[in-house]
Length: 239
Image (cartoon, rainbow, N blue to C red):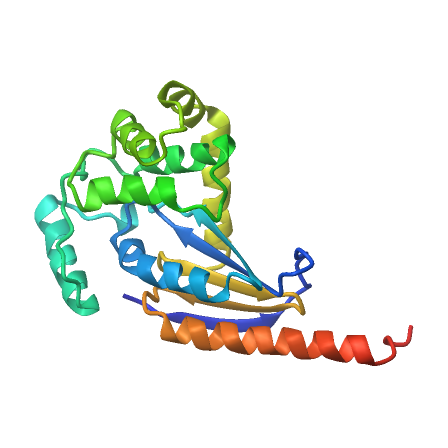
């Protein structure tokens, strides 16, 4: 597990009127570290949802981050589970040593967005991740990833989802968000990018525990509110 912290001043992003902060969570659906980070993501969403816009984006893992064998993968799972104090074991049944990247589960999660599953909706990607990581199902196969998605969100149509997930546009989208992730020079998934409306940005890479994120979100919200309050009660900046 790695940790990266960076803060800099950038042009302020555009926010909905009631939102002061935006958090983007870069992930690979089959990443075990992202799996360990899901309770933190859920906690942040429940605690800061009124003032924060949450979204996830795919950042595909490549061969450099993939295990070289099933025994090696299972060793990593034992180690990470011990580090985070997990009370369950991750399964390796999804693993296919012939693949250098796992497009299918990520394609299905991305395709579901076009059927009303927003980027702040975690149901489809979590269902696919849990089918592979907890149940050991071969979600590296498109049909298995689709089956997990449809079981979790019955309003999805498996044929339509299959067609969309198999399209060139969906692959282009996850390649583009993966390029966004690499542009951050972040070393790990999960990576969280926090941006407030006054132009501050913080990047956490590899963190799975909530405390540093909670502290930083609180500070960034406080700064944004302070500037907002000042602007409401003082004259505008001279031209």
